[in-house]
Amino acid sequence: MPEAGPRAGGDDLAAWMSHQGERAERALDAALPAVAGAVDGLGAGGLLEAMRYAVLGGGKRVRPLLVYAAGEVSGAAPEVLDAAACAVEFIHAYSLVHDDMPCMDDDEMRRGKPTVHKQYGEAMAMLVGDALQALAFEALVKPLRVAGSLAMAKVPVAEMVGVLATAAGANGMAGGQALDLGAVGKRLSRRQLEAMHRSKTGAMLAASVRLGLLGGGLPAPDTAAAAAAYADAVGLAFQVVDDILDVTTDSGTLGKTAGKDMAQDKPTYVSILGLAESQRLASDLGRRARGALEPLGEPALRLAQLADFVVDRVN
Amino acid sequence: MPEAGPRAGGDDLAAWMSHQGERAERALDAALPAVAGAVDGLGAGGLLEAMRYAVLGGGKRVRPLLVYAAGEVSGAAPEVLDAAACAVEFIHAYSLVHDDMPCMDDDEMRRGKPTVHKQYGEAMAMLVGDALQALAFEALVKPLRVAGSLAMAKVPVAEMVGVLATAAGANGMAGGQALDLGAVGKRLSRRQLEAMHRSKTGAMLAASVRLGLLGGGLPAPDTAAAAAAYADAVGLAFQVVDDILDVTTDSGTLGKTAGKDMAQDKPTYVSILGLAESQRLASDLGRRARGALEPLGEPALRLAQLADFVVDRVN
Image (cartoon, rainbow over all chains, first blue to last red; front, side):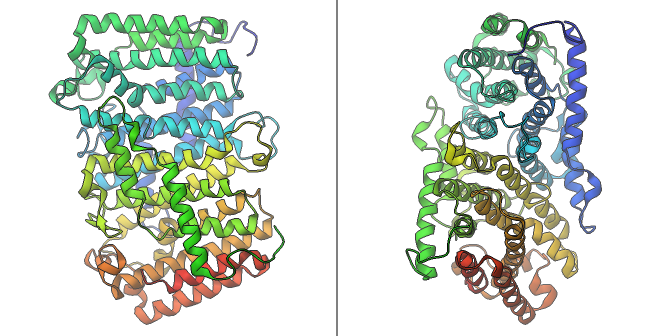
């Protein structure tokens, strides 16, 4: 763990988020294939253009911000953090593209623009999601492929790939989506709802924190445990706030269709606990997240601030 | 490269293929999550069951066989080869599930069974494909996550992950699928058809060979070049034979719908070159593949035999 000390940008969260958000945007742009590379005039460029449409120019970049904030704890190399930030955002972007398709949530608006299948057709949207998932793993290992690089020797690359794959797969995000499919029209217990969200959203948020840590080498067990407790609370808070915003905010502010959980008869924290109790739960989870970070001291400042941001956000 | 010498199983290709095919089947079964792990009675087991349905009990396992055959050249550890074999087959299986969906090829029969979306619905088929792609990367790195294992220290894990991701993504298989979408109803040149198939099928076949080599450490440049020339020829041969079988063989033998390329007005080697010329091309490519292996000597025997198998297969 690096020494705590004065840092560029001070403690102003908004400035830090803006700076790191732009950094993520540049990294994503650089990691996406250039459209100019179309093969033989056959239209491969269409896929590359649609991938860029799906990823760039929108989104809160919460997952990359968690990677960068965890990187302040681990002292990971900037290029390793950029790679991990791209990886988690590519996974997130692919999941939105597939989730919006007619056979899933059938949504027409995302990040204030037509969804990918509305813009490019269903077959292309399927391929965009598939190619973005592959790109996530390609981007993650890119700075680590230089054989014999001493700076990269301590990075546990197999562990990082495994963490990302597990969080994205059947025991993580994709598994949570399957639970979500099965939950439509059912009355879930709070425990069941939490189990669903721990997989569907929580797993990738936790993976973002873990990747930021692992980028600096295998963390000490107490550091890993503190970060895991933090990530679990932030992940649940994120979903509780999502459910609150779905009923309290209009589609224009959200950048996606508001009220759709209720319209699709999906169980949410608000439908199970009510609005006031959900708001109290979000605040509690935010405090729990901050509390979990105490053993990590000053380097965890940005992680702590991001917990507040997740609870207080308006879209 | 290990010394050439007598080997168990001798030179009988059928026995070797049967043995390695069963080995791949066991490895795939072990790498797929157990259905028993369903969370909270919410039906996550449905996804896991559908993933097993999509992967097990069918398929020629050509990609795993290429991994194992390349492993005889590199001397890679058995568990690393099993991991790579699972990885390439999971990618292949996911691509079939998504490719069969109504928004793509809309097929109802695969490996002699109803396709995944026919059996489990479209939303589940989408998630099965997504989760299988993640599982490919999880399986690939699994034996390499043991920190400090000396036996694994020489395995270039970042390079292996990058090879798999690139072959599966926008500049590989998914890109080839996008070219395929754009080619329907068009008259392609032979060069354009080859460019499409190098991405769509060839990239993952070549990745199978490369992963089998990399599992034993970074190969010498001449070994890598010989294997790459081999893989390119085998990949094209595989597709030429696929196109021939589509018009010469019935659906029962193929285990999938025969004649569908013509029905969907897709350009094929047969439609561009005619049947006799396509058969001659397949034989030429088989010879070219064998010739490329000459510098590798006796350890490349199984790769050479697999080239013959790819050209002579009947389904």
